[in-house]
Length: 454
Image (cartoon, rainbow, N blue to C red):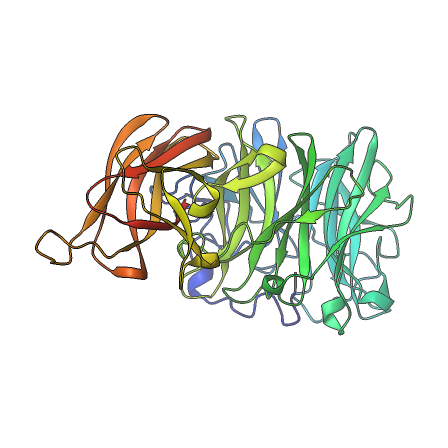
């Protein structure tokens, strides 16, 4: 990732106590949930990459604890055992040993005859961070470096970091980011064919996306490519890794080489998960024991001293668009199904429009909502309420809530004044996949700007 100070600069003695020099069980908090509760590995474990071998999940992470690459195992993606050993005890001969803290973002996969690891380290010759390769007989390691040169090292473009793999038929590909932000160059996510064991590149790289949206800051990095719903979905991290602005975005394409169309807004941010994670990023997509997709990623611990690992349910809506349970998705009221009500221009409303005149017995606004997994969610309604009772006194209002055609209570709104927008929350039980959420005429006359579901 974007690490131009040693990645363990925030490590503290406190962060190293729980799972130190032995094979210890780092158990998720009892409250750890599939919608981004507590960390599933409450230990410094940045840039997690996860591979399944039989019934065991192996996770690998950026350097720390005196190790080049850290390793942990789990059978359920929730309870993790941290390995006391360094699974990459030696670097390739091309890699500089000093300064320490420059081994990042491992990627591991089964190559058929063993396991391949791609890792980032500093190239002694060029001074750039570059991608190397190592192999092992077992996912437990130890991995042995291959080759006397980096696998990918475009030194004139800032070097290469954040390798990940993708398989298409009988062809293996490597995704990587040119590390342009090290030296005032653009950053791109690249796709490049390799040999099946990943020890050789077999063709030139193709540029997929670059940082060109305001919320991305100065860079895009940490690519993860999957194919879902018949489309290619490229997840990536953006902005500065060392603060709460780090976030996860995505782009979709109909063909492997693109063109990729980015989502206009990020998928997971500090605010979208209600600050349960600070600076989410470094993601990987994993199929769990339940057969469902899950997102594994890191975020800063509450005091900012280390990056710990989180898990959330992941679903893909129509067109391959990802939805992460626990990360808010906004639905504008004016783009919903509006019946016997009026879309109007509205001061201070999001995107300048809202739905009013929800005044009749059959008036309603109906939203189509996708859930990565079923169960209890939270509905946040942004509303305006200038209602007065018959005596002219400012009064609360309400809407009737129905979910998939079944009554689910009322959403009540305090008086705010017209065009004075505020938010209230209500519990929402959703099934996995698509749901219909309707807000209908209730007491008096509230207006709707948007709803968010997490």
